[in-house]
Image (tube, rainbow, N blue to C red; front, side):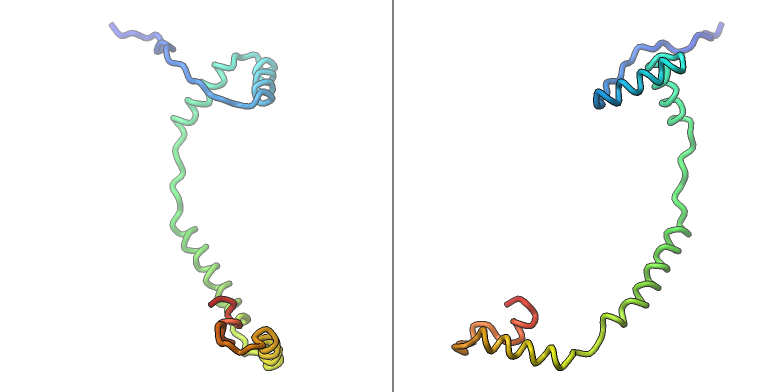
Length: 115
């Protein structure tokens, strides 16, 4: 003879949530006429039974192609020739800072911003 009774609910689950979230959840359960345990058991059952969507490789490929296209469009705007006026300003500023010409920092290091 088969046992047709539902499985015994002997396990418990402890969760920590903010007090306001607990109050709002309990109020909603009260309005819907069900217990918090019943609501949580229903949610858990849905999560167990719901098929998990598999990531689509084509979405990843399309995203990578879009990123590559945007990069290809933006990259040439970053590769512009040095402005001679900026170069002159850098040299004058460096000469002012390196008044003793001791060579501790070179012009190239100053332009790159690190030793």
